[in-house]
Length: 380
Ligand SMILES: [Zn+2]
Image (cartoon, rainbow, N blue to C red; front, side, top):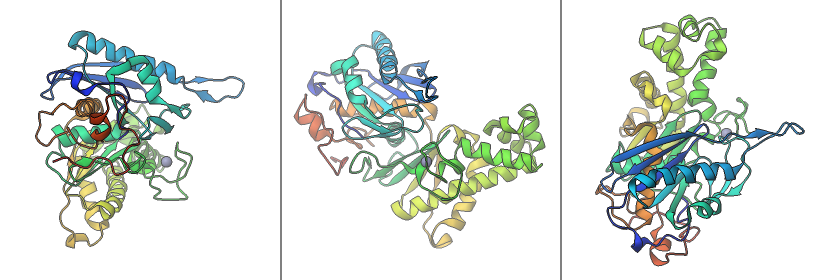
């Protein structure tokens, strides 16, 4: 949670205004127009401007202005059709409450920068809400998806990396600085493989799409993954999640073993997080979760072995997310509606989920950023 981004006047927004949410990813920007009832009216996607490589230093550098330009263009395109309403943007990485992107290993070449300023410059009063992308997805699942009604829950997105949203008291928690939920970078093996964050053995090196690719490559090189390698055109380096999933679905023993190992790694991180949070429910989304029971079944089995107390621990349902790849964009739009002071359709309610409305509600120009260390207490 990062809070308001500027000059939006909450009382100037019509209750039935269509909100726009944009999810900024490493490869694409996904934007949705969301009705007051929480229905997606339109969806647009464009490629994320890629970093350029400086030939002198061989270092990549991403032009944040170009990314902000692309976000603004997408927003305007959606608003052209649906009118001007609240706007929310989800950003991958460590985005603090003031709107500074401090660190973003999955937007390579990104220097720390004031994302809020860049977007306000382009969108003006229209931009109301900025947050980490996984927090946005958490807000969407909490309001409209698989975490509805949960007071305490954990959302985990398994994609190229791992994102997380921590839900306590029916609210997505931002933490002291807005950086809560960076769960993919919990270190599970200090001697493990290098992570894009610069350290070794982060959870997401094992339990994400990249982790599956690594497990598959190891199995292929050990000679136990013929079918998935064949599906990948014969090159072990090209084996991806879908190849393993397809051959595992056909009963291939080597691929089933890889899914079992992947499930163990997913469960290891979940068991650690459950020890901290004691959630009612764990919601697992992201591209990798779309393989379904092939991942969920081994994850649940391993979780029972790894969670403290085992069978003595109360059951923690591990369930699939419901909103798919649009969750981040939908959550960004929901966050924007909440910041604008508009009620949400669902009584489970995004209106005060994970969002510090004190700043937004009391001052149209002030912005809630940084105004609350506790963040996200429910208003009702
Ligand atoms: Zn890491």
